[in-house]
Image 1 (tube, rainbow, N blue to C red):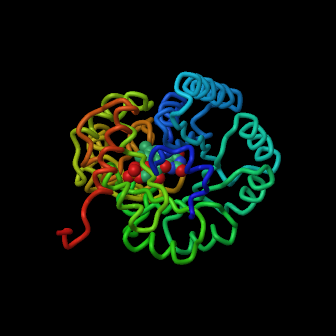
Image 2 (tube, protein in one colour):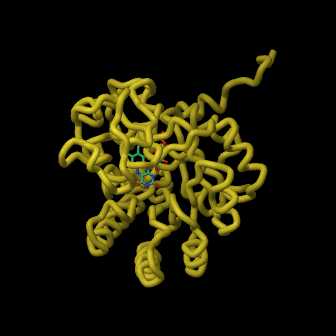
Image 3 (cartoon, rainbow, N blue to C red):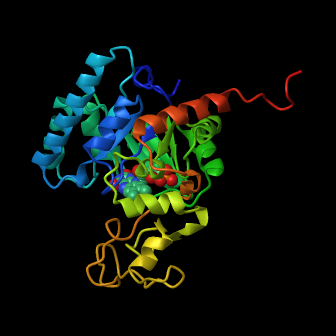
Length: 322
Ligand SMILES: Cc1cc2nc3c(=O)[nH]c(=O)nc-3n(C[C@H](O)[C@H](O)[C@H](O)COP(=O)(O)O)c2cc1C
């Protein structure tokens, strides 16, 4: 079993509400954990260490209330999305905070996770690292991470470009730990499909933007409901890293998605219209927006994903029995 039993016991579904810059705040994360799935809170969404501590405190209070009300319902594990680029003192301070607030898992996405993994293991936590290629997966395995999140093609944010069908089985063959799969999964059948490919958990971002609890503007959520897979474009032009962007949000600030100005380099936005910033003014989404029909509460979304998942698990094998 590649999903540790203590994590499995906290889950209603093999599902993670993935961390998202500008979108995942304490309300979304608490709602997801309360619904019985894992959720990731990006450290970089908080303006300060103190604000982040306040958020962790709010989430813990909300989860404790839930456990008081319904002691038998699973409350999902809490994860924090942390940069691998912190210095030793910053890392120690952050990890000490997470230990105090019962964070179960650290999610890292870029850079070499070796030092972070060593420190997370020192305090008895787990680390999951995002990868978009086999080379990055090999580095993550060398760094002794506990889980690898395969970010396949069509995903929201800094997406990969390799199909999930090619990526997950290759990584499964070389890694005995927990595997998560992200990229264009928005339905319960998609969650089941991730398992069939060899993943332990499905990692959904875009689908959770279109929820009442997500910290995203209404126009962003409306674009997800209205949009289809062809309404996103994969490009390195916006911030120098390959990512999927909503074409409508590019047009809204006067950019032509088919003829984008080139990014001068990471962190330099001089090629964008005055004062415009990726994530805040240019919205990211994965191709899984095609399956989004409405903005709903996290609770009702997870309920629907669960019934779709159970229906997908009950599909007879080919040829049909009898
Ligand atoms: C708006 C947006 C912001 C994101 N921000 C982050 C982030 O801050 N850190 C991170 O590790 N991944 C980030 N991601 C990637 C997600 O964690 C996840 O890998 C991805 O959303 C999965 O694909 P999906 O959106 O197709 O479900 C972001 C994705 C989106 C859509």
